[in-house]
Image (tube, rainbow, N blue to C red; front, side, top):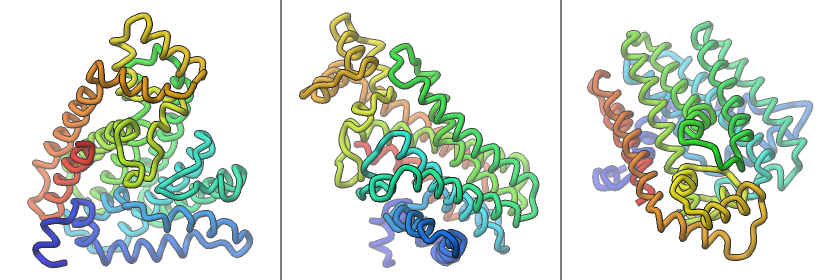
Length: 334
């Protein structure tokens, strides 16, 4: 990558370039461990998602956190693969729960195969992730990543109970986001610091960074559902509305709704009675109350918290890229 190309590249692209050899090793490990002699459908389904062009942000965070402290072993490769397996497993399960048809711009695995295959392959990847964790020989790492796996499931279940419930508050929304998204970001950063021998204060800083980055990332993702480019995001505009998910722009709009507006949200979200033109009307109500801008401000606040957490970590190019990444996850919703 030339100097001009490096300046123009997005933060996750610069991070990927800096970690290129590590990512190659992780990719080889992922392909080795997703293999199955007895059930060829497992690598077929897994490869469909792995090869779809994900940014691998979570495993990169593990690698970067370890490299920040000069780690020179191989366990960060195992942990990065672990994080990617956990993430891929949750995506397979999520698409079944949400009845999604598109992921990363491609048909979902449950659409191409079936729900049973997606769930069972997701279970297989969870099992593989635990095998990789154990190979590091660190009970602390095992505790953190197993706890993150449970927290992700907890967040998804909380989202199910909060879905279509107009009394869902911003605090409940934040709990959902912390569970289903930020938990893995935080754990990915934390375990990288642990295996590299970082101090407890530095490990806490890495966890704080990952948590805040994950929250900013999910809020931005929820905003893109109401204002993103489907060709760029790989999602259909308005999927969250159609799936009756109460994300932050809608929660804020409902809080400010008059009686007629609330009746609209009750019909479309709570009762699921959606008609032609309802998405456009939802977008108009969100625009009327300015909740996209409010939500973006919240995302910016979490991105700032993530960047501030890096201040006490070693001065390193990777730290600068991690800081730029926090800015980028919000900048993409301009």
